[in-house]
Length: 173
Picture 1: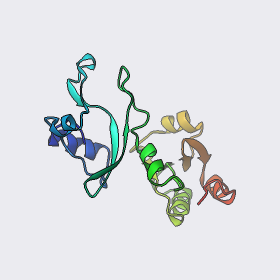
Picture 2: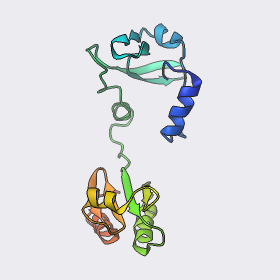
Picture 3: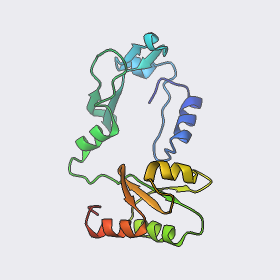
Picture 4: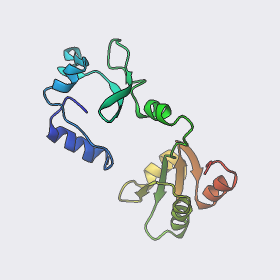
């Protein structure tokens, strides 16, 4: 939910590729005001906005809220999704954040993607000369051969390195 109109919310959802999330507009801030969370952010050039919070609601009943502390600026430390997920399922295994740099027709790229798919691990694929150039790959991986895999911000390497990563049990899958 955000103090924005439906058009902004729809664009935000599309930009974030958030197909499994319902974006709720509160254009006038009526709901947010009723919650006591409508704040004046004119000092930041935003006008009236919602204070940051997350809320667990079951059958119309608020079970838990994480409301950011009332400090200057625009704090974002406890109303995030990870805090709520930790509350809901503290022992749940987190999904891996995986990016793989590939090029069309690359046999090793297909092997790396197959390794990930076999383990049910979602990944974001970046394709050479569509999503990035060799210069970008050299800048982030220090090498321009493909595939190059990154997991949770860590550089893993190519298909063989990914297979070793799984064999070493780094994946916890």
